[in-house]
Image (cartoon, rainbow, N blue to C red; front, side, top):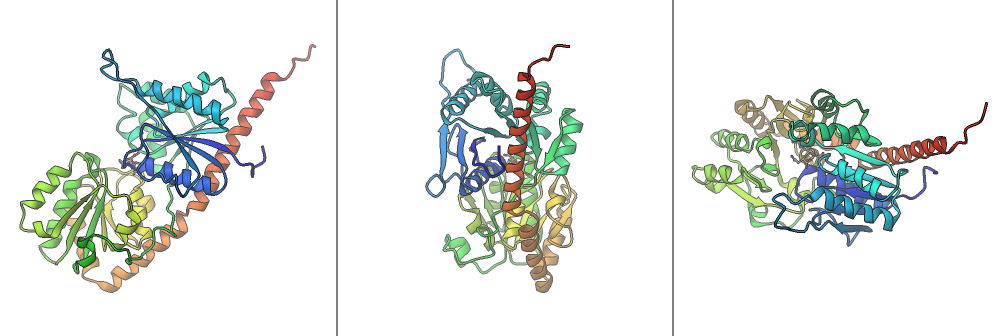
Length: 394
Ligand code: GMT
């Protein structure tokens, strides 16, 4: 197949506010803009999916309830729906995001659809390896699904090492970094937003996440409080999740209650981020840290941790400051250094934007994924030809 041929691509992802769904959807949009026929399969419409401005078709997975099922088997419903999409849309490629259970469901769907020539590409995003994939309940299935995928890609070099160390996989993992659309994520504060951001004159510390334990949301709270002891700042928290209540309670009961704002889930990160002066990202271990990259594209330096893949995104001392997880004093020191030194802060802002634009452009990543698709299609075709080759009698 020619490298410029338009492909019919199925993308499987989670619809929730997590990074893997965002990457999958931004990829779907980008591929559709390039003329590929893109189908997104999930149990709900993913947070950022826009089927109005992009030619992407959404296919919903329905999981029926039944009294016998304490745990309805989503993987089977997904495999069934995916096999239907494979047949009906004559897919050339299936690209699953997040290993569990998408990779296994992809492999099963290919078998159900009787399409051994259809490559399954699995992109690993982080917690599918570092938290859930290496749980003994899933480990062997995860390893099997990665070794059976036609290609496995990971979003950072750190995550690649984790796959080998914690899952003990023998497969090759290609690092394809996450990306940002730097024409949409720009340092532009002209958006007419909510009162908190429109009218506020204080510098803004911002955090965006799904408030899961790995995000160390309480470290955001404590860092903000330590900084606020010394300078006038406000904290804007975006997103929702298990640790939100704890964080909200602590802040609402503190003397800085009026300087904290919880905006909940928001669709347009590109309109919010430019209003931040510093992005706080104190996670225990991010495989990449997409939210940090999007902040950088908006010209916002990142104060975060030197764990996981974040150091591959944020350059310590140039586009932000990174400290050990839990180092609240370090992170508040980093904030104060920038907030008290306008020229330094301005330099970091420019460097952050430059790095996001130059090192993580969407066009490069689209090229990389499309190459992976074509290489996998060609490899399977070659295999099929080999199998069909007649045996020559001696
Ligand atoms: O924990 C999350 O933020 C969600 C999770 C996901 O897979 O939905 O995010 C992971 O994937 C993102 C996109 O590749 C990465 O930018 C995040 O760093 C990663 N999260 C973790 O590793 C904790």
